Structure formats: structure tokens, C-alpha cells
Length: 148
Image (cartoon, rainbow, N blue to C red; front, side):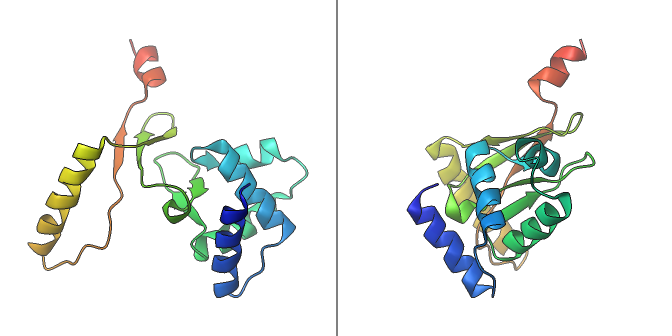
């Protein structure tokens, strides 16, 4: 884990009235290493010594502090990743069949077109846009292939 990420996470937690405990540090490291949104069961598989209740509780604290983002899918499990402010701007491909969540970064020209179009769309409804998240929902390659 980079010292910069450590410092950012510690600052966010401190601002929320929490400390950067060893369990929270380990969860942040698991999410950083995963490089994509993962489920709690994946966290527990990679770190079997962590108590499930502790993982749930610490992910809730990290989410409230703006360190972690929860991605809700159509399956029974939420996925978790480091907050975009700590990583990079990206979007998600969510498989409605198996629940897999994959990160996707749009080409710069597509992102620029979205950045231009979305504020207009929001303004037409009297809404002031701060930022956007885009989740594309469909079927992943594996599920599409097995359907044939």
C-alpha cells in the first residue's frame, strides 16, 4: 500500500471520528490488491483470519468515511471497492445473471461527451450535477457464452 493512500485513508477516518486500525488497514489493502469490486465472501476467502462480523462492521465505517464504495447488484451480495476519490474515475459493467462487477474506464473522448451532456440533462430537471457514476447492466461474456 502506498504511503499516500495510507495518509488519505487515515485523514478521512480521522475526520469521521475513527482511527485507521490494523483491521481497517488490512481491508483497504485487500481492496487495493483486488483492483476491482469484490464481495465480502471474497475478502473472507483471502483473509480467513478476519472475523466476518468485523469485516462487515469495518466496511460500514470505511464506507461512511468515504474510503469505500458499495456497489449493489442484482445478486445477493454487494461488492466493495476503494472510493473513486482514492483511485481513478471509472464505471462498472454489472452482470445481471451472475452478479460479476468489472471496472471499465471510458475513452477520454466518450468521458468528455458525457461530462458535457449530463449537466444539461440534469439542469433540464432543475438538478445541479456534482459528478456521475455509470453502471452498465447486462450479461458478462461468461454468461453470454453459456447461454448459447
